[in-house]
Image 1 (tube, rainbow, N blue to C red):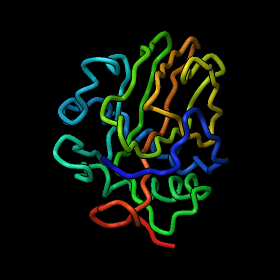
Image 2 (image 1 turned 120 degrees about the vertical axis):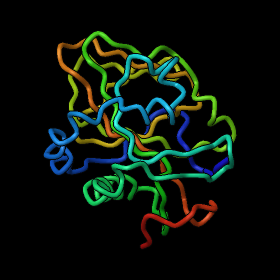
Image 3 (image 1 turned 90 degrees about the vertical axis):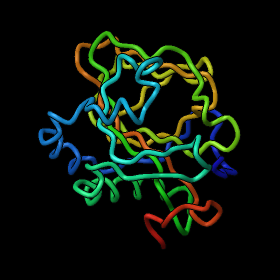
Length: 197
């Protein structure tokens, strides 16, 4: 699997980011949630993520190889908006070359849950898994290894998806997160770094 020598074992706050460019394009994505290709690439939509809506931009095929990635149709259209936000979020890691193998938006409407689970394809060398809330409310609870967290809008957090985690939206509004994975491209055999410092 991917190499990652400094993944958090709980939740790591990374800092604030400017999410306004992403908020501006949300209306353009109104018909992109849960398209047929999303169900094809993400098998968990049948199981732990059955109550979550997605817009996928980039995906990985971990069962085919440790670093097999592909871009989905929307990546080329929106990467100019997404990449600066993601690059800002990952600055604390200090990697000279970075790569984002999975990139998506995830929406949970009021009353929905993601039951407690472990992401099974991250047992050995899981990448950094980063969440940036775009729309949220104080009743969204993110539980990681039995501890509850509230992820604030416009702030980036790494969470440990190799440990038990769950989410519930007990509020009256939807929750939308930008979620992506991050790798040090210098120690992983990625197709091409997304950026170099």
